[in-house]
Image (spheres, rainbow, N blue to C red):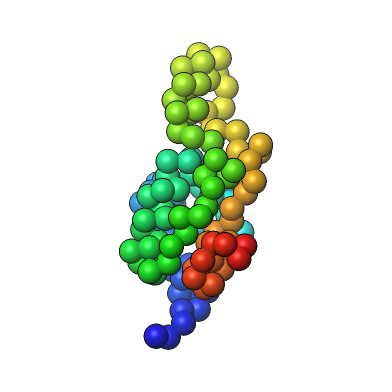
Length: 116
């Protein structure tokens, strides 16, 4: 099997990410942060892991979504207050470690999240 280049992996990841979180495919760049820039929450990660496995045959189930993303239940429980007070509606990703698109590309190249 021929190893895919980073650019080929990125081109295959763009439609997956776009479909999951509605991000513009052109805004999905290697330095993009899944949470802060692209809007991923914890529940989106499980769908991403499944799609990556289907597309690349790589198991990234070791990703600890609680370490990197707030759960979607956090958003939905705070949403009425945010709307009422006119607060920004994005989840606060600053308190979480970040995963960049390039981290996914590298993990796919390695065949595992573990070595990260």
